[in-house]
Amino acid sequence: MYILKILFKNAFRHKLRTGLTILSITIAILAFGLLRTVISAWYAGAQASSAYRLVTRNAISIIFPLPLSYKEKIQQIEGVTTVSYGNWFGGVYIDEKNFFPNFAVEPRSYLEIYPENVFTTDEKTAFLRDRKGCAVGRKLAERYGWKLGDTIVLKGTTFPGNWEFVLRAIYRGKEKSTDETLFLFHFDYLNETMKKTAPGRADQTGIYFVGVKRPEMAAEVAAAIDKTFRNSLAETLTETEKAFQLGFVAMSDAIITAIRLVSFVVIIIILAVVANTMTMSARERTGEYAIFKTLGFGGGRIAGLIFGESMVITMTGCAVGILLTFPAAAAFGKSMGMFFPIFYIEPETIYLDIVLSLIVGLLAGIVPTWRTLKIRIADGLRMIE
Amino acid sequence: MENVRPIVEIKNLFKSYRRGSQVVPVLEDITFDIAEGEFLALMGPSGSGKSTLLNLIAGIDEPDSGIITVGDVDITTLTETQLAQWRAINVGFVFQFYNLIPVLTAFENVELPLLLSPLSRGERKEHVEMALQVVSLTDRMDHYPGQLSGGQQQRVAIARAIVTDPTILVADEPTGDLDRHSAKEIMDLMDRLNTESGKTIIMVTHDPRAAEKAHVMRHLDKGILENVHPQDPL
Image 1 (spheres, chains in turn red, cyan):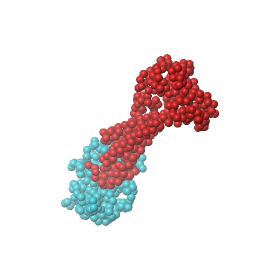
Image 2: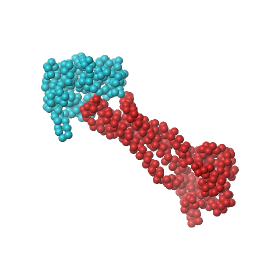
Image 3: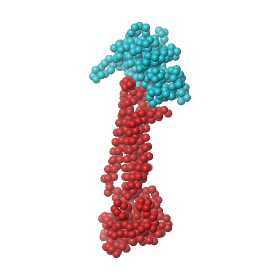
Image 4: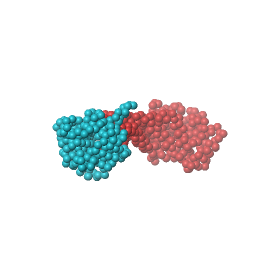
């Protein structure tokens, strides 16, 4: 029992040094946790994607539209359950700082194909009935203090003009990973306006959302869709929703790799800090370890004392770091909500924190243990007083 | 003491140290016995090799050649792990600077060697209390070394040395860091351990007053051992 007491007492014998080491570990774990969560947030869209959904876009590039007439043809393909479509609207609320994703969608089929966006029956009906109505996620409504019935004006960028909407529904995410920052409105509102102001851009959509009967049919259905429109004026590229999302993530691949690298560099730096502390502690206590050896404590037990002390320091820092990661991530997620709509700490990040701390604790103890065990008892005893 | 069988037998013991490329001989062809129940004082000038000899007998250093038999065990043939186990059972140590673990109480310091024994917690407690009673420190068992005087710390160290009831008790300058009064207390305690409990004690000392308590005195000079009667002038 008091071997544990020795470990804790030894660890905190040099309070300032141990305190600073623990602080360093805490900051490292905090930084590591936040960086990993940022990476997870980048992949949140891909992780939240459904295997039952495909996305069809123009084969040349997503910026080129597809004719609305494709909907009927896609619907007829074997394995397709639902077809919806939509356009990235790119509207700005008040000024450009207020970024949030806004889409013109065919609402009935869209809500059917995205059941994770949960509506109350009344609000859903109100949204479907009102052509100028919009539906927003809970977090977005909270961010701007919007209430049902409010009029929201978006300034069009790709579709010029001021666009007025009436807030008819606020959805909640079924899962933690569901994006609650979307702004959805009727495709018809956009299309009818285009017919009047820019007829060349009417009856076209950016993407089709395609529901499939079974996930294993996805490849087959995707190939069938693309085959249907081969050699047409607008050839299609159909992929799973996950692949589509990962395509966006790939655009930031260099940044993500850099963040990932930095997160591990932080751990390597902290390994050096803990190893330094442990080396100093073990050197200061060479005499005491010699006493333990004199009394008959073998190499295994001495190693246990040094590794144990290293673990006490590292795991204390790890525990404090993990505890602080939660409020820090909540604050970070709140302030960066525009860029990371889904920002939460995954259990894997916590497991990784613990595993890496254990590894750091073990590695930091190796050199001081080796040095302590190597030293002769008589030489160790001479270091006392 | 002639009829008492030797508890320690040392034959043709050599020990040297390396200083860079130089080999410095410390002990040269040392041969002598220590009888069971004997109180031996090893004396000599600094650097004469007396602490080295004590370390060799206690199994915390290895000779270049020669045999050291303690009880029936030739400790020069033991591996490091076997030596550690042997020390835990057979040797009690008393150092000049007490060498207590500062983060443990007097009780816990004394209990430390017993952690390596198969004794239960209750049995350990009994042994520790008994050892602290021998050194008259039961009232200070919850004190940390920093809260005790030098003499009291040395008494705790003696309790730690005797708690496992070892075959031999080795003491390296046990009074070297104490005032005269505390030194006398410690030597009286060592004397009692020898005369009343029959402990074999091997003590290195510079202090002639401390050496007076010994039955046998051996003088080491430049690695050569000679016999001296305790009453002889040094």
